[in-house]
Image (cartoon, rainbow, N blue to C red; front, side, top):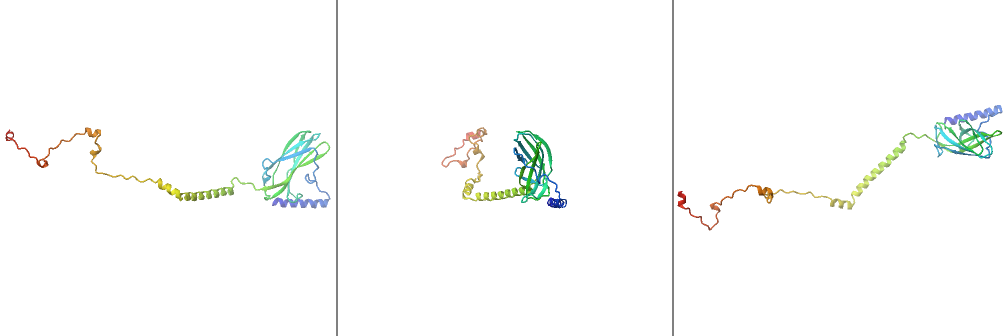
Length: 255
């Protein structure tokens, strides 16, 4: 806002000086000379093709020139200005008048780079920018309005865009919560419950029996090599019924 106030004061002061003295100094952009018929120009903003100019940042514009005339021309200077959008005659900021003194022969082309910087205190609004090219031959002066269009003055973005970072964090949080509830919903569906019952493994029960360890060794090498116990004679009580025990021989007993 400071630059707007200063511009208003300068404009009012120049009008008062012109009325009091009867002489108004001629500004290069106030009444520029007409263009030559055979000169064509183009412009290119390499760093800001969308015409969004950050306040307080140098802006480069490349001016392309084609001399289609029959004689060479000397391109002397370039100047630009920042004007009010709705009233072009109201100058907000005049940029530097840069001299080049570049000679372009007939039928040749050339390019010039001009740099200007919008004031850092400018508000984020639409303005009008005009870029004027000045040149001459041995007899006459000319000028072309290379660029005259509306631009946007924007705020220089910081290294970390916290708003964008917060937006991405919110998106990730929503996706995480949605994924959790979707997972719970899928697990609660009937086919998932049946699948869980089918795949559930029953525990294996083991039983302990009083089997003789020798039973496990039957038919193995260990059973074949183990010593056999001597057989016991059956006692008298173990004789079969109906069988008599032989009488003892007295002769044998006397030996």
